Structure formats: structure tokens, C-alpha cells
Image (tube, rainbow, N blue to C red; front, side, top):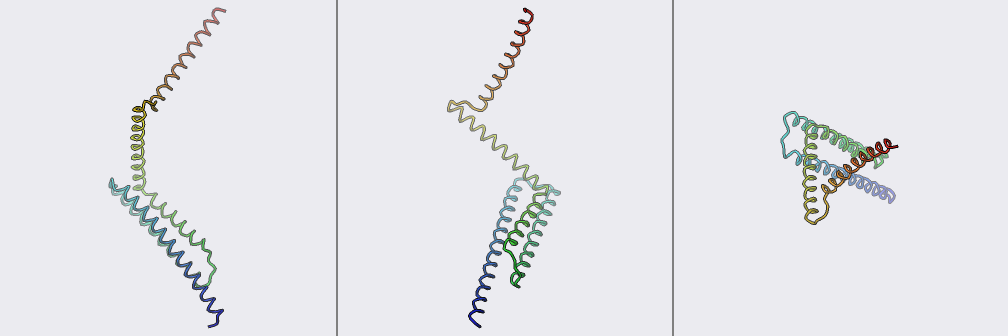
Length: 181
């Protein structure tokens, strides 16, 4: 084999190796992201077991998402094979396949009633936590002798009431002045 052929073969091998590494890394990152998403979803669902319909919807959504990921893997394999056979394959195609697949898979899971229920629970938990934090903040400010949000709200209400009364008195004075003229 001539030096030119050896060099071309080495360049080709390096290109294929780089492409395989990029594909493997991309697949690994996307699978890790999918696993992390499913783990956080499972943690959110841990507190309450959904009813049969929600559970069925959840399983169906997860199954559909899994199918999307498998289709993406097949498409990636096809594009890798095409590149190995000499077809000019842009590396952005690989990224686009995974991004589109991730969007579709998340839509499948997020469209389930179980996911909606879990989101509802999460929002309720966040609102309860916010109320607790607000209460702790008020207590802390009160202990420091500083005005709290409740104090400021009360002052604001009093000012509005005073303005209303002042406006009423001004109207009465205007009527008295008109009657005297």
C-alpha cells in the first residue's frame, strides 16, 4: 500500500472514530438526560400513587417516549452507516435527530394525566413552601423591629381609606360652598 493510500486510510479511520465517539457521547448524554428526567418524574410520583387511568396513561406515555428514543437510535445508526459508506453527512444532522427526539419524547411523557397530576402536586408543594418562607420572613423582620409586608399592606389600606374620606369631605365642602354662593 502506498503512503498516500495509508494516509487516506488513516484519515478515514480517524474521521470514523471521531464520528463514532461523537455519536456515542451524544447518545450517552441524551440517555443520561432521559434517565434524569424519568428519575425526577418518578420522585414526584412517589408521594401519591396515581389511579388506574393515570397509571395507564403514564405507562403509555413512557412507552411512546421509549419508542421515540429507539427510532432516533435507528435513524442515528442509518446516518452513521451512510457516512461510513462515503455519503456526506453533516454532523449537525446527529444533533438535530437527538434534539427533535428529545422534544417528542418529552411531549409524550408530559401529555399524560399522571404528569399533569405530578405537576399539580409540585405546584401545590411550591406554594406551601413559599407561604412558609414568607411567614418566616415576616417573623424575622418583626423580631428585628422592621416593618413586615403585612405592616406595609395595612398602612396602604389605611392611606386608601383616608383618601376616600378626604374625597368625601371635599365633595361635601364643594356642595356647601356652592350653596353659600
